[in-house]
Length: 408
Image 1 (cartoon, rainbow, N blue to C red):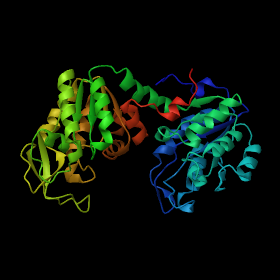
Image 2 (image 1 turned 60 degrees about the vertical axis):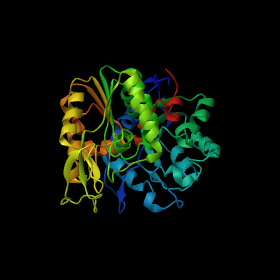
Image 3 (image 1 turned 90 degrees about the vertical axis):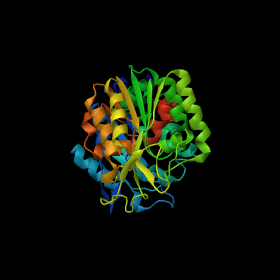
Image 4 (image 1 turned 135 degrees about the vertical axis):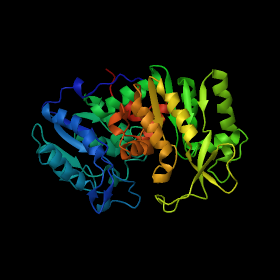
């Protein structure tokens, strides 16, 4: 994938209408934003375009919108928060059609440096579908140039991510990436394509199936691959070990055997847990602080127990592997980190990354949430804003939202 893309620093937007696709898919509770990380992440690009005299038209999706438009998934709370953060009124165009008469009138009335926010793009219904062509065209008609700063959506060929670029380009407009996208490309893209070695990749999370192509691709690229979390038990079972009631995907046993053999053939180090924290079952509630646990060797998990975190010996093993690395990519927690009794493995890995001099890249989703909630966020070189997108980057896939931007 070509990674040398035009950014907001390469385009002149003075007096021009700029449609900016942001990732404002923020968590809401009773209409209030509970985590504004994504809003804060979008501000540098928005401020740059405002400062350069652009007329900044923001758009984003929020939620899955399964049952049609509803006020519970409106972007109104985001407009309110943006107004506070920018110290300037950000009018919200609440029209469920997104690009209707209200949006056109608001754009026509904009002055240089103004900002407006359109309604949730998924309210339109054709954002994600193959017949999104009309919506793509209507979005392009609101703007002269387009900037994608929504890495979390860049793996989807949606109307507001990819479709719109064709029409903007047809009328001579620029299609660039924002600062957030540029940072993701610089860190994640280059970590995989051109890493400073030794390169260590750490994969966790629940399912092997979610990371099949990632494991395969990273084995070609990295020097050491560490596997923890629920997905490790399928690998352990593939080695012929007893895993008790632990999470397993029996349909992927042959795949895991192939990956173990591939690592050996390529001379790569593949590290799996050597001991495991087990309990009688998955904690209910998930954050039950009184969960009774014990630590056993990873090849001796009792039949009536379930592995839920890596043990002390594994924590030391994984931390040691990170010590002399120059590039580390981590995607997926080592255990049920939401439970204080089962967070030790994830904490140990986060601490090991915080203590190393390597470039440390956290690949979005649960690992980003874990690093931030455990207080290690500011110690990492880069925390990706896109779970699915960062996984596809690590798979070596072309992301539509990146590919659609103009090359430099």
